[in-house]
Length: 368
Image (cartoon, rainbow, N blue to C red; front, top):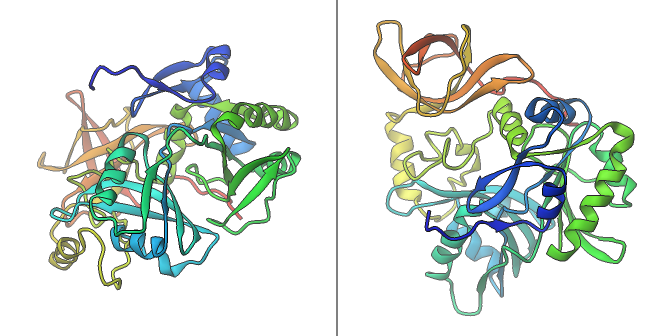
C-alpha cells in the first residue's frame, strides 16, 4: 500500500448508515457484512431469495474508435468474435512474457467501435496502461473508474426485484441492454458472481444511490438483504469461481486455473499466447481442484496440501466454511496426478485436516 486514503463508492453513506463492517478492497473502503446476521444471513438470502451488492469498486474503462473491438481482441484471451453486440464476455489480460494473469475482466461488446471493460479494482490502471502502451492511432482507452457505479442483484427472486423498477429482465445469460430508469441511463447485464440467477446494473456514479434505494424497497416483499463482499466471497467459492489474486495471479496461468474455456486458442494472437500454448502442450503445471473437508477445520489460503505420506502436493488458493454445506471447502492448486476422490490433508496452523479432492461447484444451483 502507498498510504493513499481509501477511495469510497457512491454508496458509502448508505453502508455507514447501516453500520456495515468496512474493509479495504483494492484500495476501496467497501462493506464486508452488515449487522443482524452477517455473512451467513446474507449468503442464505442470496441462495434462497435475493440480495444486492455494491460492487462499484470494480473498474470501468472504455475502448473507443474505429477498430476498437479488433484491438481488444488482440489483447485479451477470449475471442470476442464468438459473440455479437450487445453481449458481454469473461476474459483475461495475460502477461506477454510469462502468461501470468494481470487481471480477469468482463468485456461489454457494445459495437465494433466501442467496448466497455470492467476489470478488478486494483488492476484497472495497469490494464489501461498496458493497452495504452500499444493502442493504434485513432483508438482511445480511457479509465472511467469513478464515472459509473455497479450494483449486483442476485438470487432466485432477482427477476421480480429488477422488474419492479421497470427494467428489462428478458435477457440471455451474458447479454446486456442499455435501459432507462426514471430518465437515467442504466446498463442491465444478465450475469453475476454467485451462481444464482441475477443481474449487474451499471448506472452513472451520481445515479447509483437512488437506484440502490429503489432496489432496497423493491426487495422488501421477498425478505431481500443488502449484502457485503464477505457473502460474495463465500457464494463464489461454493461455485468454484476464480478470484484474481487467489486462483488467478501473475504466477497462476489460465491453464493452471482450468480457465482455458476463456481462451481463444484459434485466434491469431493475444497477449501471452505463445507461452500459454507451450505450457498447455507440456501438461506439467499444477492444476486447480476443489477440496471438501471431511474433518473439523476450515482450509485457508496458503495452507499446504499433503498426501497420505506427508508429501506436500499443493496449496490452498481460497478456503472458507461453506454456509450451504456447513463444511470447510477450498480451491487448491495440486500437482499433476491428483484425481477426483483422492484423500488428502490440509495443514491448518499445524493441524492436519482431512479432505477429499472434488470438482467444483460444491453446490448445485438453478440459474435458468
